[in-house]
Length: 472
Length: 91
Image (cartoon, rainbow over all chains, first blue to last red; front, side, top):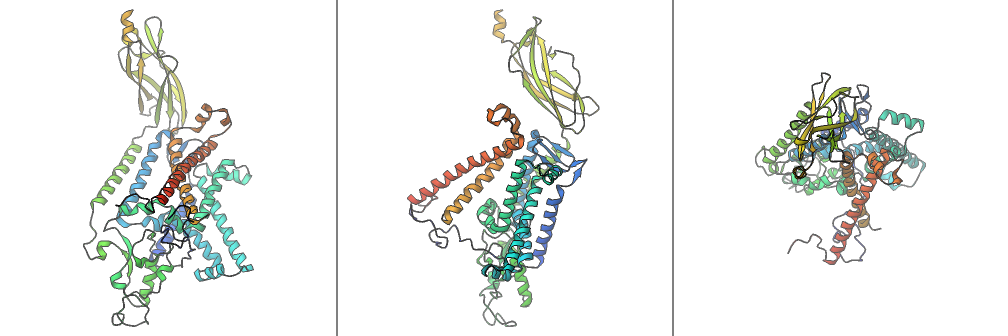
């Protein structure tokens, strides 16, 4: 393509083969085993999404990533920004699970659990409720604007908008306490940023589930592009049995297909009509396929009517289709599974043995050291004692590192309220003759009130440089 | 606007959105926007944490969008000159 040439009319596939024209897809409704499975998944996942935000635990929201307060509540657990690596580990676990299940069963996530699929399905239900089944929707779109069309389309938009708005509201309710934003919204006192995020997320829901739909999977989803890297010849995919189906063709019911020189595919194109991404599975595995199995349901139905065995389109693997061995345990699965197990073990063990106490030690920035009483060297620190527990504790601060190091004042216990931070000035002293140079030391904070935990943080104690000392 | 420009704009905005979201999570896990406000110039006075998160995210998104747009621009113009082979591989 030359510069300055008008870029790619979409249908001009030779010039710009990357993008097909975005023709509106009217997925035909389908029923069957996998459609039922997806419906169950949609109801369960959406049910969880809309209800968990309202659960309470010990008198506060059970699952709340409280960004304004910078604290994460996960049921009995309170996580602080310092605990961020737990979230990082959770993300890694999620990614590894995706790899593991992709290697095992292909894109099961896409077809049943991806938010894009789940909300699109919900939006399609609303569309069917207001505009009717596929044929009616196509006629309605092609027809002129009548009062009925206005009412049906208007009703759909109203329901879509309300549903999207409630979705956005619930989303924000996981990041700000949902009960307080509810009363703020009802009282008209919702803050500008809460409003902004609710608006943005509602708009994303409305656009993605109402209009973009399969285009999200085709153009926006990175996973769709790299999932093939996790595939191997034993990965479960949805495939059309070419050997059994071809040559395809229409025939009268009861015709002996083989006598007529035909395969089992009657070329009814139902598998194409039900496909939410608008592909023809008979052309082989394509990256647009989200493995929703709608074509399996449709084809099984047809095979039943033709009194042919089911499974002309089915979940299978490349090896199974070519008649090779049964699925086996592969190195790939062991690696993904092993990493997943290790990460899950790490998070469980570290959560079980977690100490709800953190220290942050900052050396005084103004002076390296100070001479006191002529024969002692003093260093000053600011110690942040972060009590992550949901009750108050009393702590004792101790210092250790070399002979003669001690606190300048007799140590008094520090009381820190539940989920609070206390900043304690700490002065350490050592005799001048022992203090020269830089000493690695440790500050230890011990809980006093029977709670059996402590935390140690490393820092430095700095004295005069030794050469200076020698000149004296 | 031709369809390819629209799609490229969409890809730029979307990929930078993803990068901006991840960058915001990592950045604000380490840095409290309230501390940034106290240490930063006077124009930020009076902003709360929520404003800090939102402005930070929008800023990171915008930076990502500029980088993505530049990448797309360079790839597109390079392809026009090298006669259709954008990937640069092959004999």
